[in-house]
Every structure is written in C-alpha cells, then in structure tokens.
Image (cartoon, rainbow, N blue to C red):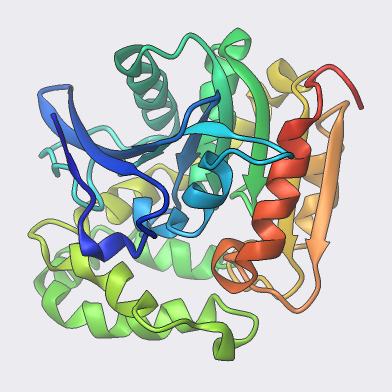
Length: 299
C-alpha cells in the first residue's frame, strides 16, 4: 500500500516521498520511500521512528553532484506507526532477521545500512547474519558492547516487577519522554519547532512502551551475541558518526568498536549529543553522502 506522507514528517514538497506499508509476520509495517539510485535503508533508534530521518531523506534522495540514493526509512514493528504485535520477539537477532525480511519484501538484494543507536546494533546484526547483502554500514552512536553508560538504569528497567508499573503509567510517560529527549541533545538550543511533538505523537498509540521494555529484557545477552558475530562483518566498509556529548552511548566506546573493522572511519562531532541528524543535519547529511559516494572497495 502507498500513500502521501503526512504532515508529521515535516518533509519538504521538493522531494516526493511516499508512505508505504508491507505485511511482516502478519502485521503492517510502515516505511517511507524516496528517490532513485543506490538503495539505502535507514533504521531508527529505540523510541524513534522514520520521523528521525525527516531531514536526511531529502538530502540523500535528491540528485546531487555528490550522491543520490533510493531511500527506505522504516518504522520497526512495535514502534512509530507500524503495528504492535503481541508477544513479538524483540531480541537483537530477531530485529536483524526482520530487517533482512524487509529487504526481501522491498526487492532489495543488497543495500547500504544506516542505523542509529539501537538501530545501529540491529544493522550490525543483520549484516552479520547475511554479510553479502550489506554493501556499507553507517553507524550513528550505535549501541555496542563497550559502552558502560546506562547499565544501572537498564538493569532497573529490565525488572519484571517494574514493567507493569511502567505500562500502567504509559499515558503520563509521554511528558517524561520529552524531558529525556532533551537530554539527548548536546545543545538544547538546536531543538527545532515540532521536534518533541513529532517524536511523542506515535507514543499515544496503545502498546507503545511494550516494545522498548521487551528489547531491554534480552539486552545483556544481545550485546554478548553482537560482540561474538562482529568478526563476520569486519570486511564491510563502515562509517562511525558520534557526538562528543552523547549521554546515551559512551563516545569513548567508539575506539573499541572501530577496531572491529578493517576499513572504518570515525567522525566525532564536537559539542553534539546522541542524535547528530537532529542537531547538525547539514553536517550529518554531508558526511554520510561523501562516504556513500566513494567506491565501497576503496579506503
């Protein structure tokens, strides 16, 4: 199914973008599609959705002298405006497998993967499961085994005693999420009008907080598995983008992750937080486009 993109994306009219749906495991999965060129799949973070890429999609999909892509920006099942299936396996491996099935349904034999935060970890897992289908990786402050941030908070949120309380308080957590989102910025003066409202909008749908809680249940096991499979993707050309003031995924872990790849470039953005595509979109888009414009076999 296809449809016009709603006003919630904030995307300019100069870049034709379609909202599409596919059926995945019996549930409806939403994604945005734009442009033509080399396929590029964008994967959001834990509580994000395709809205996260509203400034990246036009820049990467429009024809330019640097680069142009056919962009697919998904809402993972469980979040955004995709369905929220009951009892869905939310392990990192299952997320990677769903990304590969999405590629199958979209007719993508191979593509470049760009993932942010937990989406970056999912991108690495998908690549590890079928390395020949991923041309290049762009990882934006990706969750990884070497980041020590938030371990105590994650352990608390994983508690089976706390989960029912969080779900019962879900309507009120939308306000707290806005506060948390502000902390993900290096400089809150860079928050543009409509940003907080855009991220909060799909959280009004029933069951929106079940997905992140389910992800956290297998968090430690997932990170151990991710570390074990990284040698399978060491050959894939990779770009790491991090904000020096990231409070969600430790910027110092970037060095350890970089060592796992043979052809990897690290770009550390000074004074930027966890979401550089929000804070400094022009610099972010230029960095990504320049990386993707290079031949994947060159260094």
